[in-house]
Length: 183
Image (cartoon, rainbow, N blue to C red; front, side, top):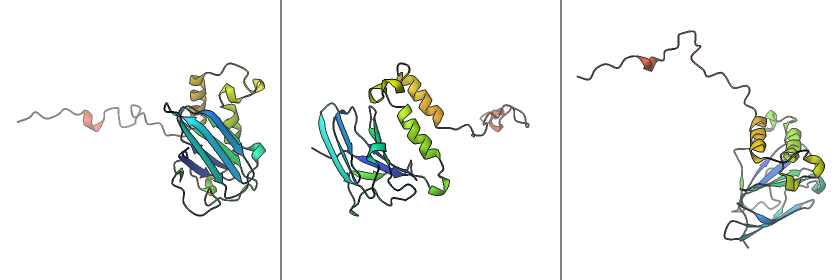
């Protein structure tokens, strides 16, 4: 068995860990107050992955969840002490080669709001049907709608209008002028 590569990031009330395993099967995720056990078989070569993470702080195992996709397994750990920052994922200060910080999702706490709670709720809403109860899925799950809903939830409504055709200086760009003849 080998450890799966993982990326993590901290939020006000949650810690997210993404195990980067493609085509995982025989997935087992167990949340304990101070530990996370993860194992699965991944890839076409049936590679056995196993990670045991002794966590920096305590979590609420009953309120922690995971979601499997074709490319990874994302774990959402609800902190036992909301609002307390985790300077690292593990209890031990030594660096692990298989766990890295996910800087693409890292966020300053000053910018943080109730978004985490919404993200946690959407985490359940967007799960494929094999991870939902019948009451949670009123209609058949369709991956393309799931992707569209996920993209819509990412925001972007506040982006400026980049259409220059209605510009008050006219619709011609500076590069629309006629090119001089070559001599």
